[in-house]
Amino acid sequence: MKKITLAFLAEHIGAELHGDGDQEVAGLNTLALANESQVGFLANKKYKSQLDDTQALAVIVAPAEHKNVQCGALVMDNPYLGYALAAQLFDDTPSRKPEIHPSAVIADSAIMGENVTIGPNVVIEANVTIGRDSVIDAGCFIGADAEIGKSVTMKPNATIYHKVVLGDKVMVHSNAVIGSDGFGFANDKGQWVKIPQLGRVVVGEGADIGASCSIDRGALGDTTIGKGVIIDNQCQVGHNCQIGDFTAIAGASGIAGSTNIGKYCIIGGAVTINGHIDICDGVHITGNSMIVKSITEPGLYSSGIPAVANREWRRGVNRYQKLGQLFERVKALESNLSEDNS
Image 1 (tube, helix red, strand yellow):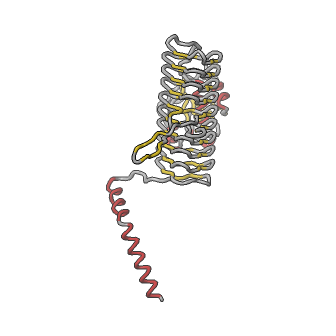
Image 2: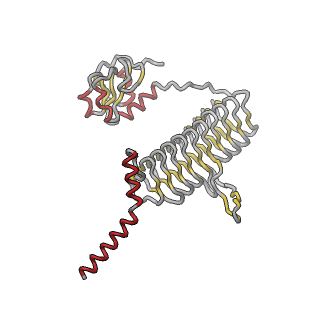
Image 3: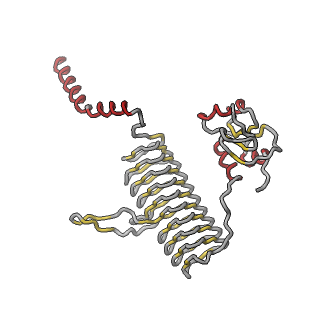
């Protein structure tokens, strides 16, 4: 790895350096764990107290916190972005030499660009196209007529069904399934009749699909994942959903079919979203919320009950069960008051 000095790091992340720029940086760490050759960062005020005791060589901080730093400082408006850019310099993900492993099974009609890497036991079916510089890791499956863009990365055991389209620079993590059948069945006197899903999944440039996600193909028309969308692990996206550019969806969230989600939305973990609704641009939904109707105004939305002590929760549930009785009593009292005043 190239020698990284504080001065080089500051320039790379766009920070103002306070300290000896010639000092070498060995890596990144938290404020609590960083040693004298590592750089920490403060992006969450909950950890502000750790600035006093950190052993870090330097800390990436916002201008307002610079006065509290006892070591070197890399000052910028968005320290978390600084951390992200710095981490790119220290990324130790193993690089792959472009090659096609002899155990891969590749249809004669498949077309691959330059510098493509195909790992062990990969299966690539008929008429697949794979753009240059893409990496298809061990055990992946790509179905017939799928289109894989340039510089795409598929981690081990990812599955791409037939006719799915992945844009350039898409990342698909292990065990994700893109293009599986949507939940489409018609009921015939108590028996379920399967509806073939005739659409595709189209994933935009730079999207990142987490491990063990399932994205269903469209029933009629396509399921679309926009440019720069990030989806955390173990999320479900139903058939014919449309997710706008640069929206983020945290882990274990489930989105029912035919839901339209706008651009630049942030959806917290374990959120459940009903089908056939619309969510406009710029919506932020906090974790564990249930969205059952369309959202037409940007802003912060929440539902659910945060955890409290069990005794308090039981008391609350007991009172909730009596709300109906309380409502009827209040209604009767209001009626009596109205009669008395007439």
